[in-house]
Length: 132
Figure 1 (cartoon, rainbow, N blue to C red):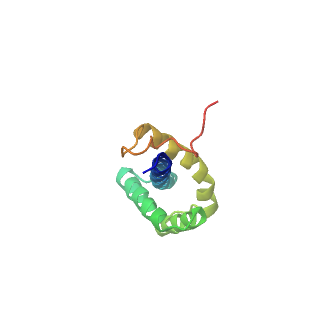
Figure 2: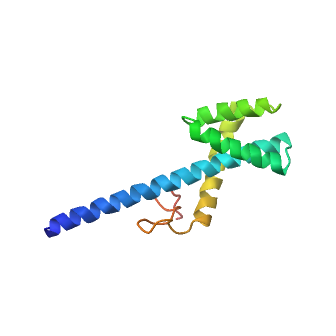
């Protein structure tokens, strides 16, 4: 192998590791945001501890199947209605950015280093907010 080949392989591995790190972070933040949305909704409905955790878990599952934020908000609103509550899609959608930021902060704090050795901390990356 030539030095150019080695450099290309190193760059390729670096890009793959970065992609893996960013996907890991996105998944964790999205799942946490969905859990927080379920907890937020449970609080608005006046649910207790076990019921709150159940709705939070259901929200995460809803998030796995959702095709986007609007789909998530609609499905969560439907689940809330099935519980006898009334929180509209618009109210849920309006909370998602705030809950997403909180999820990002929590995940960055809980995972200050990467879960695997081939990439950096979960909270780092092009989508992390920079101080300055």
